[in-house]
Amino acid sequence: MESHAMRPKYSVVVPLYNEEGNVKALHERIVSTLRALGAPFEILFVDDGSKDETVATCRTLSPLTLILLRKNFGQSAAFDGGFKQAAGDIIITMDGDLQNDPADIPNLLKKLEEGYDVVAGWRVKRKDSLEKIIFSRVANMLRSILIHDGIHDSGCSLKVYRRECFEDFDLFGEMHRFIPALLEIRGFRVAEIPVSHHPRVHGVTKYNWKRGVKGFVDMLAVWFWRTYSHRPVHLFGGSGFFLSVVGFGILSWMFIEKVFFGASLSERIWPMIGIFLLLAGIQLFIFGLMTDMLVRSYYRGRGAMNYTIRSVIEQR
Image (cartoon, rainbow, N blue to C red; front, side):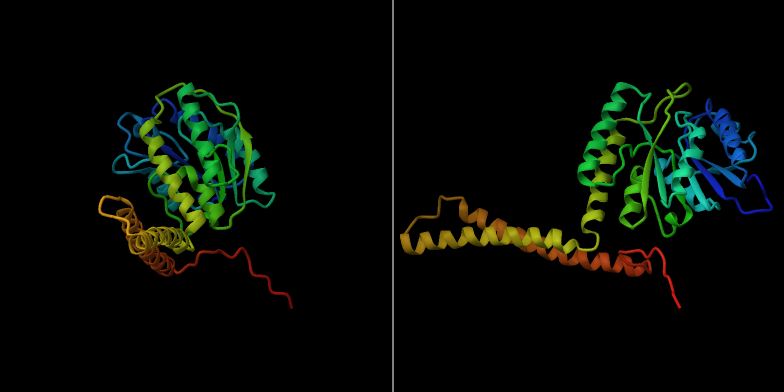
């Protein structure tokens, strides 16, 4: 922390995994940028189980709060650990590979002052491999279709948040990519501005196809929470009702054919399809009711509801 006498205004949270060649230069650039802002700050490096000299190098840096995870839990866990330790009114996140530029932080903060709760960086001119860019473009296209969060580049870690964004907030899986979307669901105001992006000089990228698959699964989870978190019975119950109606219709027609037209049903598959759809519909409807009860219990257990209040104004 830059000043021990005052609570920091800014907290910079950076997850690290095998970034021994980058941490020193990154720390210097962050310190230089934040000192120019003229307010107390702290820097939190969260080591996610590095196997190189990342931790040893970090121990030589100051000012710095070094958080060591017991093993490699993933970037979302590292961010979450940093958020829970951060004391600043504004939380700034970025990657530890020197591809994000700390010099962009003042522009993000300026945008935040316009009344937003979250400002995300948009790497308009990517400096990554073609494979990584293609994966990112496809992921962003799917995200824009499913989530509609208004963000062009959810993979950019350079973002600024107001502290209240992370009250009663937990990250799991690979959800760090979707923090703006998760916050937008809760009613926070999200903006995005272009930022610079630099090629990786030291170390190797941690992105691979496995992370892409995990990210897609998490994207579906975010889609569900955005669309049906407060009414899951509409998704499962509605689907179940539709299947039940179709199944009942098929069985009714088979009954008519059998009774009034004397048709033989022993070698026809439609009665089985009708029974299957009817039973599947009933199960989905019951599952929707159970999910609805679970969601209600989830919110009550957290002492919260599926909405947030921005402010209460008393005029006398």
